Image (cartoon, rainbow, N blue to C red):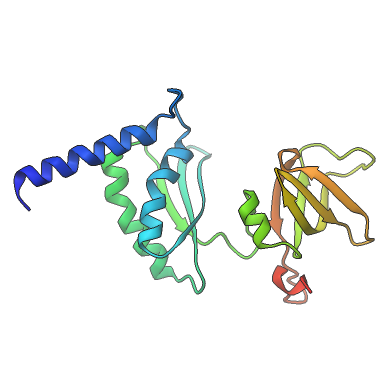
Length: 191
C-alpha cells in the first residue's frame, strides 16, 4: 500500500470514528454505545451477531464486555473477535481510563435487551425482574412466558394463565430461563 493510500485510509477511519463518537445533536454517547458502533462492523465481518456491549466497574477495575453470538459459537470465534477489535479500539481510543476487554457468549440465560431479541424468544420462559413491584403484586420478579412485544410493550403469561402487559422500561432485566434441574432450555418450553 502506498503512503498516500495509507493516509487517506487513516483519514476516512478517523472521520468515521468522529461520527460514531457524537450524535447528530452533538450529545456525547456513552462508552458502551460508542464501542457497540465500533464493534458492529467487526462482528458482521466475522459472521457474528453483536448481542450486547457493557462498560462496567467492578471493584477498582473497569471492564469492557462484548457479548457475541452465532449458531455454534466457539472460543475461537470469541478470540477472533477480540483480536479484530484490538486495533479498532486502539485507533479510536474511546476510553481514557485503563480497562480489561472481555469477549464471551451471552449465555444460556441471556439478557434480552431489545424488541428484536425478545421477539426471537416469543413462546419461551423468561425471568422478568421489575424496577418496582407491578401494581397489585408484592414481588418484583416473575417467571413468565413471553407472548408478544410491540412498541416497547410486552405481553407475557404467568404459570396460572394470568396475562401481564407492561412496558419494557419498567423492567430491571429480562433473561431467558433455563431449568437446570430438568436440563431444559428456554426454547424447549415454547410448544
